[in-house]
Length: 124
Image 1 (cartoon, rainbow, N blue to C red):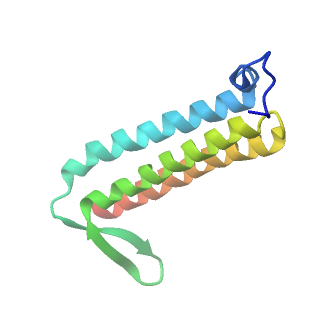
Image 2 (spheres, one colour):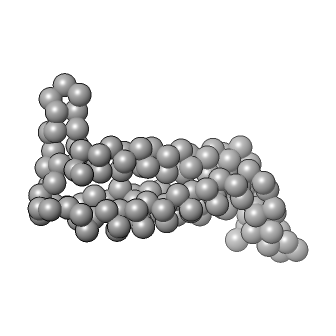
């Protein structure tokens, strides 16, 4: 690859950056927590069809099968993987964009925690 100097691995400078390490660790731990949390609480669902969306104007407006609640941590995993790989490739060229990608992954994980907690609140 033309991006990388052959003397140094692209991962060595990437993982020594504190902002990258903290946000990557936070995103990974949060996503694993989402998977485990949903696995634990999905056993408590009493029916196959559950409410998956709540709107303050209309109330519950979307029902679907219970396993589709796992699409939320799956989307978080895919976003984390895509942004993580993109961030590694871009880090040497543009550090600010790399920080943005990893920070965005952490932000998405926080939004997913909030949405999962609200979905579980209306279901349990």
